[in-house]
Image (cartoon, rainbow, N blue to C red; front, side, top):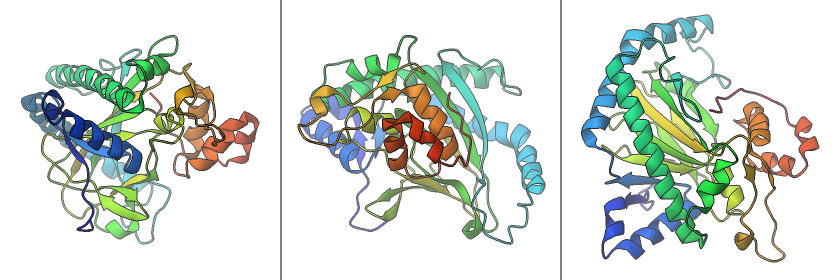
Length: 321
């Protein structure tokens, strides 16, 4: 990271004291100019986070590592003689929390691991809704506006992607996760504090997201850029592979419900300014699933005329929760 670039770190406990205004301004600046910020003192118990990190790494070693190695062999990635641009160097599984959970359908999870992830998921859900209201306050929207938009008729969707990024013998040949913006709403990431790799694109420069112990990294998805009519931004980010260390990543996605109607908040649309599209979230996800690793701007343009989506060439599939 360049020395003159200071990644935004927000101490959530300062919202209750004399530094509230300064903290809210930091959040607002981060949403406008970074699309990312890192939370400290967020209220999630550190012992819960420590237990989840321990069990996630144990689960990978016991149940996922061999499958990952078999995947590498099946895709001829175990040698990496040439650069690979259509596969990610990651081992993942997905947990759904809302509207219905699949927590008890995931094989090979211990009862202790399931209970911890259920507790963690609920705490992250509450934190996401708290943060959405902070964004509402900064945007001049009524409290609860963003949650109401996200809810549709059946409530928001919420899920967790549990990832491990194993050591890679030739990091220059493949990404852990290719560059993309996230399609949904608010993303809350619990990442490894010892093995780095997450980067975001800031003013044309790839910047490291610092691994801070017990922090939660927040980033904004495409839907918040649309609702704020571009005042807040979703930002391209990627995961770099490393020669040493297995990087843990637990990313939870607080997204709109499938039938949620997404459109710019009327109070954020300035007269004679360009307006972002209006659409149903599920329609956006159908488009995103095929073009996740392409720029977001053509997706926004395509949603202005749904018929135009056929002009985009699908290149990937994606878990949409």
